[in-house]
Length: 251
Image (cartoon, rainbow, N blue to C red; front, side):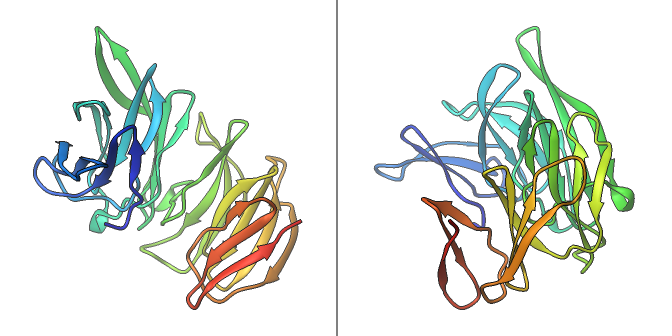
């Protein structure tokens, strides 16, 4: 399991993989299986709790599809096919006004899924899609962030290729807004109105969050190579690189 578990009430929900067990929930006290759902291989993405079409549910991206699950009993509420090479769905889903944004690298692309409740049942369909080699956003392993109607994230070109752009798009339309070409691979988190980006080469890059264009505020080489994102708490940043765990004073 490469994804992070989701804790909900007395349950811990994880990707397992297999027939009827793509997603499973276990009791946090005794480890007993509470429920399992969906078929197919496990994804690298983490199960995420969000409100979709007016209902709180688990949204999971397995190796072959995105689906909504009732957290109380594991009932699948809706599915949307999203097969990728090597079952490599890694980025987490993002909630956008009750819809669900998913993205994958390996030259795959992204989709905004429109989920509606019709006659008591959930229906999932494409709101907009941008897939294959001309996609506007191909998150290889990094989850995009949503700010004021815009998605900011990494667009990786090719099958795990070396070229990666830092990109801003309109969330509800998929329209490209700006792109910092060949920015390089990294990870990002949102804090204090800024993108805190950790690159694979060991740099911490601070970028202003604005749809007006790429605005770099500063950068410094502070750690060894890493694919990890920065964790921020109480004015300090924590990151694990290839050698150690580092604490950085941010204030």
